[in-house]
Image 1: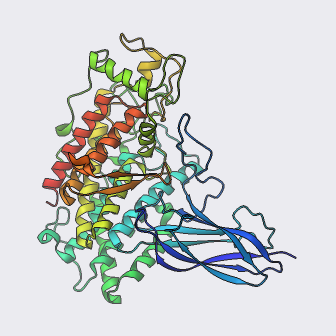
Image 2 (image 1 turned 45 degrees about the horizontal axis):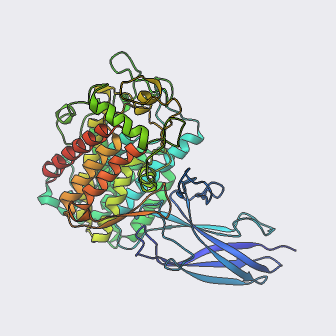
Image 3 (image 1 turned 90 degrees about the horizontal axis):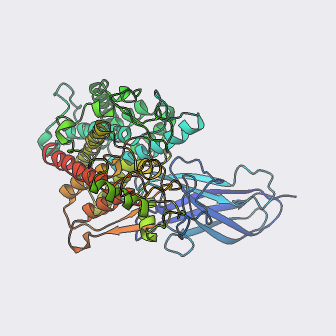
Amino acid sequence: MEQDLRVQFGEIEQAPTTYPDEQGRVQVTITNDGNESLTDGSLNLYASNDGELDLDNLNSNDDYIEGTEINSLKGTDELLGTLEGIDLAAGESRTVDIDFASEEFTNPSVVSPGVYNLGAVIDPNNAVAESDENNNQAIEPVSPDGTDAILDWNSVFLNASETQGKLDAANGVTLTEDTVPGEAPPIQAHDAAILSIAQYEAINAISAINGGESPYLDGSITPPEGASAEAAAVGAAYQVLTTLFPEQAATFELQRQESLAEINDSESAESSGFDFGVQVANNILEQRANDGVDQAQIPLDQTNYYENTEAGPPSAVLLAGFGDVDPFAISSAEDFRPDGPPEYGSEEFVQDTEEVRLLGGKSDTDVTQSLRTEEQTEIAQFWALDRNDSFRPPGQWIDIAQEVALDQGNSLEDNAKLFAQLNVALADAGIVIWDTKFEFNQQRPYNSIVEDDIAGVTNDPEFEPLLNTPPFPDYISGHSGFAGAAASVLESFFGEDVTFEVASQELPGVTRVFDGNGDQNSFQEAAEEDSVSRVYGGIHLRSSVEDSLATGQNVGQYVAENFLA
C-alpha cells in the first residue's frame, strides 16, 4: 500500500515579482492518488529561470561567508517558502491558496520580472514512499501583470544567458585561446543590443516612435498594413535569440506561443506582425554579422600579454580582442578611452593596493587583519554575478531597468526605446572597457600584494581576494563601466527622483534600496555602489573602478543624447 502524490498549479491571480510590496497569489492543487493517507506533508514553492528545478543545489541555510551572517547562493533556483502540515486521505484532492504576503513565503530574488517559472513540489525530501516519484512537482511559466513583449523577451534573454552558462558547464566548455564559456559580460551586452535594436526597429516601423527615425533600417523593409507592433517585437526577439542561442530553440518556441496568445490583435495582424519582426531581425543580424565579436577571443602575444597567476595560466584570458569589435553608437573605443592607471609603485598605486589588501581579503591572515565591514561584504557579494550561470553584470542592470519600467508603467513604445538605448550603451561600454584593459594591461591587486615587493605595500603571501579574480586586466573595471553607462541612460530616461529596490541572484532574500541619499540621483547611487563593490571584493584598485565608472557614464550620456534621442 503506497501513496502517490501529484501537484499542479491552478489560478495564478498575480505572479510575485522581485518588488517586495507586489505580493503574488497562486493556487496549487495537491492530489493523493495512492491507497494510504498523507499526514503532515509539506509543499515547497520555487522560482526558476529555466524551468528545471535544481533541488539538490539550491540556496542553502548553512553556507555562510566567513565572519558574517551572509548566506551565499548555491545553484540557480530559489526556495520561496514551504507550506507545512498537509493531510490528505487516499483519493483526496485539495487546492491551497498561497499568499506571498504571508510569513511562510517570500518574493523571488533570482528571476527577472518579465518571464520566469514557478515550481511546486509536494514531499520535496521524498520522505513518503510513492508508487510514482516523478509526478510530485509542477512547473508553470509566469509573467507578472503589466509586462509586454519587450520586458518579457528581455527576461527570456537573461534566462538564456544563464542557461547557456549551465549548458556549457555541462558540456565541459572552458576558457581557452579559442573558446569562451557562457555569455561573457561584453558578449552579453553586445547580444542584448542586437535584440533591442531589432525589437525597436520592428515596433518603430509600425508605431513611428520618435517620428519613425530609424538608425538601422533604410526603408527597404516596410511592414504590412495593419501589422501588430507587439507581435513584431515578438518576432524580432524570437529570431534574434534563436540565432544567438540555437540550443535553446525549443524554449523560445514555447515562449513565442505564450507571447502571441497574450496579444489581443487579430490573427492576421499578429501573423503579419510576427513575420515582419523576423524579417527585421534577420536584417539587423546580417548587418552585425562581421562586427568582430566572433574574432574577439584571440591568442596572447607580446602586444597584449597579460598574466594573472591567481586566475590561471596566461593563455586563459578573456576576450583580448574585444576592443576591436565595431561599436553600435559611438564612433570608436579610443574616443572614450581613459588616460590610464596610476604609475606602478606610485603613491596612488600603493594607496589603492593597500586599500584592497585591508578591505578585499577573503579572511584574516598572519599579516592582514581585514577592515571590511559586514555591509561591505554584502555589497561585494550582492553585485558580483561573476558566475557563468547568472544574469552577469550587464544583465543585472537590464533587470533593474525592467523592474523600474514595470513600476513606472511604461508603454510598449517607451520600453522599445529605453532598452535600445540601455543595451546599446552597455554594449559600447563593454567595447571601450575591453579596449582599455588590453591597452594598459595592468596586473590585478593579487599579483601586487602576494607576488611583488613594492615599497609601501605590505607583502602578504596568504592574501586571497573575497571574490575570484577574473581572467583579464585590472584597469578598467567591467562592473563599474557597465554600471556607469546604465545609470546615465536610466537617469536620462526616468529622471533623478526615482526610488527603486534591487534584488540579487547572489543573495536570495536580500534587497538594497536606492533613493539618492538626498544629494544624488538614485541610479548613480546604485552605480557607485556596484563600482566600489569590486574593491571590497579584492579584485580591482579604486583608481580602476573610479576611472571606469566615469568612462561608462560618458558612454551612457553620449548614447542617451545621440542614439534615438
